[in-house]
Figure 1 (tube, rainbow, N blue to C red):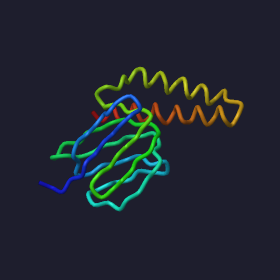
Figure 2 (figure 1 turned 90 degrees about the vertical axis):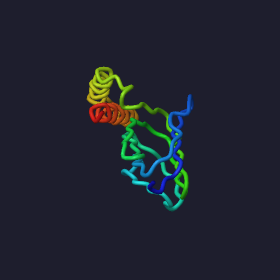
Figure 3 (figure 1 turned 180 degrees about the vertical axis):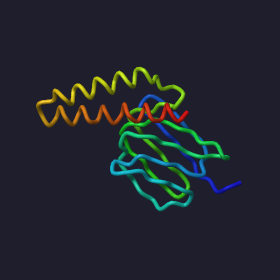
Figure 4 (figure 1 turned 90 degrees about the horizontal axis):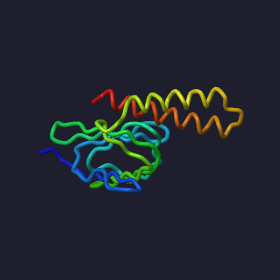
Length: 134
């Protein structure tokens, strides 16, 4: 069996994943991080995107938005605001959210409104992309 580490993905409401993993891909704020067993310790801020992890040849996918990840040599803990399993994502709702966010961006008249709309766009796009990879 390949070398593994403990993976936990948690939201404020629940434990989403507690499993062993051979590899995990995490959307950092400034790009994706690939984590393997015995990775150097780090803490990173999460962006909106896809978390996927591999165990026994199987890949598990999740849409995630914002939070933090702590990486230790034998454990990765993801604390996220929202997490959805690929199979739980309502694609039509995500597409509606994307259209609404794009409309909000077009009508935004402050930097704060633009920032909020862009964040909603990234989250909706991530949800759609993860659902389509199912």
